[in-house]
Image 1: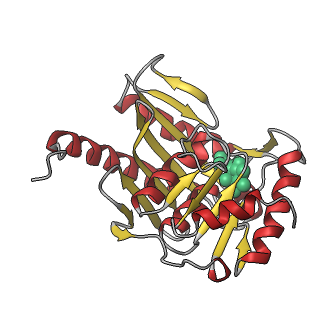
Image 2: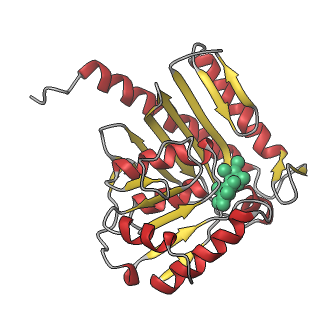
Image 3: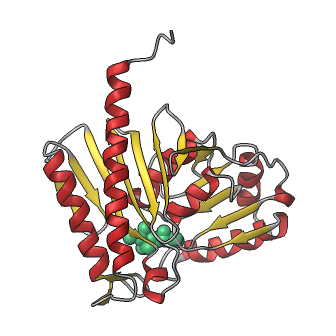
Length: 272
Ligand code: IPD
Ligand code: CA
Ligand code: CA
């Protein structure tokens, strides 16, 4: 028997995963019902949209987590810090990842929910309700799409790779820098996409649809669940310095592992 196998811990992790999967599916069903029925759109900045649907979905998720786990801390995109004051448990929630797509009727968006214990990602799920695709993972137990195991791609040549990225809201330095990165990687790879939902981009790396993904100014709620799914699918996730990623880092590179160094090398190149 594997000496590090701890049945009690495994059981707990899997039951958290089930709770998260059910919650992500319920929240996703809510998003799907509200497609085309947004009541209020406002701006959190010059380009950063938020709708009544983001907020209501946030309430739905946060209230379920609070009543099931009153002793846990919560960090969600729309309501900020919540739950207990101090805990080793932390929930990271993006009720609607891909709000710009959602507002425009471009149906590529999802719900993202993850749980950390003492800064380690334990379980997470990303649900795309329009395609009924549930990506989920629990630490040490693999990554799944609709409960079937998934793995990253085996592509080792960058000129055969399909990559994706995203751009922060606004027109700051990192947008300019990422336009530069986009051009550099477009020249080296088969193609680069910009789908507009970082959590799904990560899950597409986990399932081998993309071979790599990078972005520059993400938040813990954007990345937490997707990062665990990529890692459990055999991928590598780091920052641009190749330090192991944690959701409180804002730069991310997630790959099928084989392409990791190559993509980092291109990102570090000065010239186009
Ligand atoms: C955004 C999406 C997008 C990424 C942005 C995120 P939101 O999240 O993940 O793909 O490029 O950086 O902020 O605002 O739709 O939850
Ligand atoms: Ca997001
Ligand atoms: Ca969001």
